[in-house]
Image 1: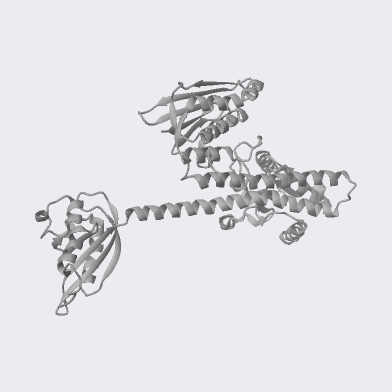
Image 2: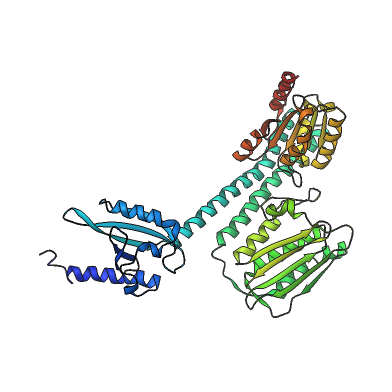
Length: 357
Length: 131
């Protein structure tokens, strides 16, 4: 007798495994008929055992994977253990990613049936896709950053070359030197930007969302621009009831409205005094949509649309700016679990809609 | 006008003008920090049969990028062909820019910044070659 020393007895242990594992286990014949199914499978397809036994497994799978499944079953009946991935619903379940192993059962050197063990790897696959997406993002980020580092750096290199062959007393020498200083300060600024951006990215999953009094933060940001608004003849109206709380991080929320206001002032229309309206529409009991509308110079979204929130993208050649503001706004909104949309018409104005919990 | 320079960065333009000046080519250069104005100028010149010999254009500019400008010059393909060398300038090292540049037959070369005197010399050689 085998396994005399182990307790409980072997078949009790295997039975327990079959009954209690969260993985789906089926036993099938060559025609794909289900001869046995474990409780995990029955629970997933929400059928009693008698409705499952003697049915073809294909009936539980989506059509597009049936052929693949049949091929793999055939392969297992040649005596091979096969392993593969599937994305399919089973019965009435939602579609999931499955890591499937088929293990042949042999009797007298002939395969008489095949065990299937399927493990739900949906979460793992999703995490993997997220990582791939993040990697792609990071690579793009690296290119953008390297471009913006090299841009002032190449200027500095060229200016030094000019300095080397210029007469130190000449006025050209002086202006070249001044430009060299500017280029180096720009370079420094890019490095600081990277720091800011990385610190947001770093904290993305760590930010503790808390209830923040929305009106208070918005008023605070507006207060900061009182002088600039006054000087440009503009007004900002805040129609957010006191007592409304949103989930977020206070510093991030402040930064969102700070940057939006700063843009509104920077890109105001010369043809009319700036008017900013910050209003609130409580959509359902949870989502709060904040509308940030200005009557400024607006932007052609057909042209700028996809790049609007991208790092170091600029759309107004005549204005200074590094193309960081809206990138930070979006990063901040997303890191507190919100969403942002923009609509705009050239020469009419721009509306940002920020949805928060 | 032999050389048209287009870059939205004023310091970059200053540097380029300086370089051409040091090569004794000051009089042959016209520089634009606004690509829209540059395009207007180019269209006018080409229409009146005065095709510039070399155009240096920065890829990364707001509103009208170097690629946009190339697109806008597409209708003048015939006039530009063999008469005008077009150099794209970029400080990015993104390899996709290089492959994209190859899709535009009218582009002579993609140059990684900084533009320096060696490159200007090389361009001058190319000008002699294309004449």
